[in-house]
Image (cartoon, rainbow, N blue to C red; front, side, top):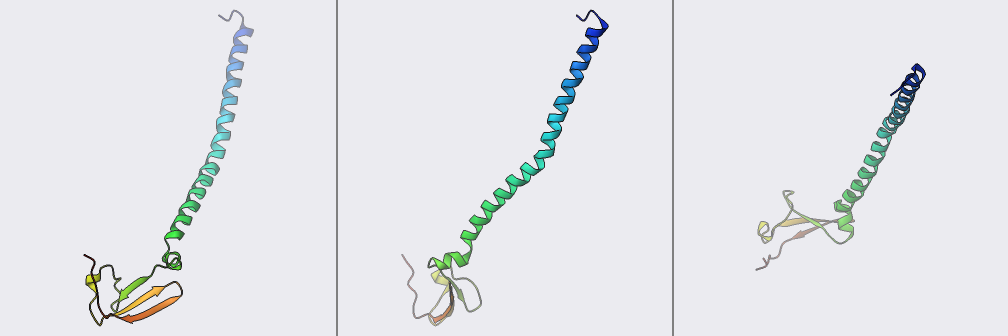
Length: 108
């Protein structure tokens, strides 16, 4: 197909130049890849951090929720954990409330 040494040399030179160009493009991509990956990861971590902050009990308490504990520190999750005259400590957004149980009424 290449009838002269000059044509053969041009073919080889053209292929080498194409290879060098592809190599340069890929090298550039490889240099940018870590920065792009880190930026995407940082963005994802920021989004996750915002979501986690929403689950922070302090934020929930600011919306009216509270955490009630028995005198031994266990969180009250079930009315059956509590009996008459138990001392409870309830944490709200701006402090705590200590109370004594008068009665309990399980829902049926």
